[in-house]
Amino acid sequence: QVQLVESGGGLVQPGGSLRLSCAASGSIFSLNTGGWYRQAPGKQRDLVATIASDHSTNYADSVKGRFTISRDNANYTVYLQMNSLKPEDTAVYYCNLVLFRPGLGYRSYWGQGTQVTVSS
Image (cartoon, rainbow, N blue to C red; front, side, top):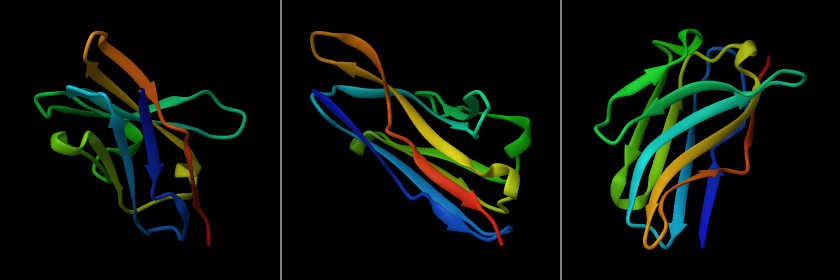
């Protein structure tokens, strides 16, 4: 069994910062890829950032230069540092981790989502 726990969302003023965390626990050999996605009301879920096992990263154009994705392999955790936040960043943020699990191989898991609201 694997659990993913997201944390770090909240209400912040424009220009502010937040740091999201996504931690996996359970029967895990290793963390493969990690990603953050977001979904605003009435819109589809969009990719925000991904980080591969070699630590290479990919960002949506709308967040480049403002957001940074990172990982802690030892603790199966992925982070999203969000700076210079804008009202249009308001959404529910979901993490997705691809984990290598004993007897199962690679499996993809989603976090429960955390609300980020950017408003004055």
